[in-house]
Image 1 (cartoon, rainbow, N blue to C red):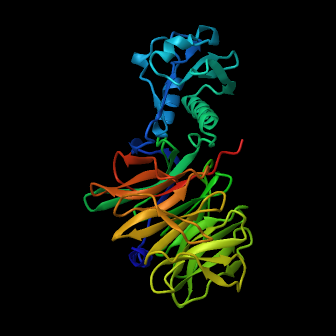
Image 2: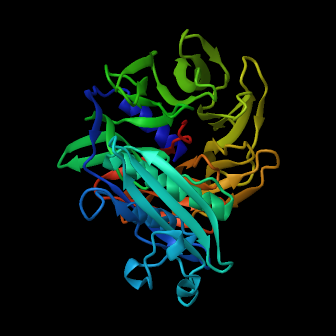
Image 3: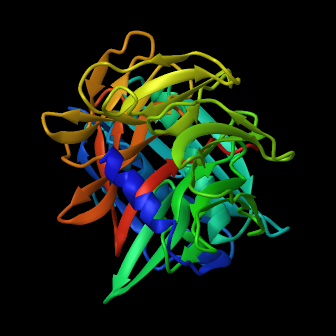
Length: 444
């Protein structure tokens, strides 16, 4: 798969592409989440429909429904269906714990959505431990009035509940980016799409009749780097998501591929074929355009990723005969160290936010699966169960890994928890979905 991927990139570089930038256009295809494997006993809870104080009898957006969906999709919780609820309190004084004990609910969430005179909205919610008969937390959030604003607020509520009950920071309020390919007869169309982490609110960042590849988030979550093939060769662009403005940062002769931002956002690690067509890893200062070569070998060096401290870079190389993961300090002339030894194929490394684990594509008895690797010991743990799983990327909390896989001959997205207990399939309505990358936490 590693060599085939390189061959595809070489072939694509000869194509003439017509990439159309579209700012942020709503995508036709929306992905949906299906939990295929959760914890052995998801925690039973009830998220009661929130009360509404404003014009009309019903709120324009169902905050409680999205909170319930988020927590159910985590695989760790089992929210009760609304029609099965024995009561629907919206105020703490209305809560009778006995009502929920008899239906085996462990935790209860109630709340209200208030319309404010200035047009904003306030979300108020309380989380109760039913078994202990006490309130755990209560919060008040102010947000805008649009459906998008209320979606963000609902994800924030779910994140706060998730963290309170698990000790893990929630990622419902983050985003994912991915490439979607659609075919109509002989015509192909590629879209780079950004959506909420649950697949909702998909927005097209770039669109092309030829391949778009290798999206990568900036550390502040405001930009994407990616590869397109305008002008008969590959080029790397950095695009601001809010404005749609993009800069071509590398269009050197040969291959320009696999960009990834440094932790401070000032540099890109990328793959170039400057030396007689051989692929090596370089660092590019985005502002000054100064290049620093990191690897120099007759083998193929590609798919770089920075360590969180910015001091070293992991990458894939076939210099030992097959693809394996290596590490090099982020400076010219540094010694290269091999990291993976277990198995004949380990590629496309991505590193956890704490720097303690690598996610890789690992060959497991003829199947390509997502595995965790300890970069210090090389110990490998297979997490996924597909036959052609690829392109892993960590969630910003380090607890989940998103990746691309095949289902019924179609490219889809999936995720797996880093303990292997929870798996989700994230299927697209239409098209072949690939190369997912998870955004950092939003900066408030």
